[in-house]
Length: 235
Image (cartoon, rainbow, N blue to C red; front, top):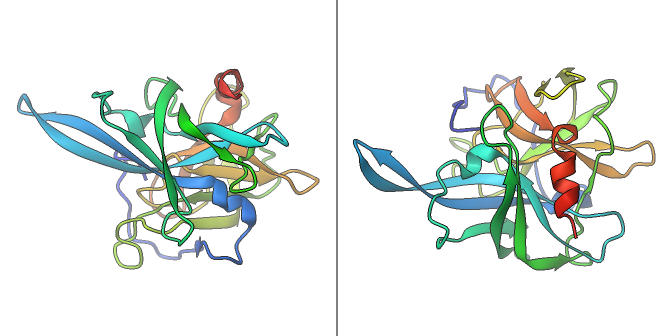
C-alpha cells in the first residue's frame, strides 16, 4: 500500500489476478511510475514511486485523458522535467504507456487524492474510462478494489493487476473523511480504484486506495470528497 504503511503477511488472500476472463472495466486501472527526489542528510537521491491510477471519463465519451491516483504517490515529485508515466494493460501484450502531468491534489495524507492529465487521450474503443460515482458508495453493497500490488513471491514488482471483488465497506463517514473496507491490497495498489456497480451494473469509481495493513483493512478516499476537482478537469 502506501509508503506510510508497510504490507503485513497475509493470512488469507482473496485477490484475483487480471486475465482475459476478468471484467472488462478493469482495463481502466493502470500502473503509475513517478520519478522523485528524497533528501537524506541534506543530500538528494533519486526515488521511484510505483503506484496505480484509474482512467476516468464522462459517460459515453469517445476518449479519456484524465486519471485519478493518491497524493502520496506524487509526494516526492519535484522535477517537472521528469516524466510521470501511466501504463494501461501493464504485463500484457496490449500494454501501452502515456505521459501524465499533475492537475490537482489534496495536499497531504489527510486528503490523499490527485488528478492528472494524460498528454495523449485514450480512445474509448481501446480502453474506456470509468464514470465517477455520483454520490457516496452504498455501504450495504459490495465494492471491488484493484491495483498493482507488489507481492513478495507471486508478483514482487507489481507487474500484473490484481483485484479483490465482492468485499465490504466497514467504516464510512457522511462528511469528508476516509472510508474503510475489508478488501485486500498491498503496497503498489496505492492510488488504485475502488469500484461499485450501479443498480444497472455500470462500474462507477467510488474511491481511491490510500493505505492499509496489507490484510483485512484497506482505507480509501471517497470520490465524493473531491468530485468537484475531478469534474472540473474532465474534458
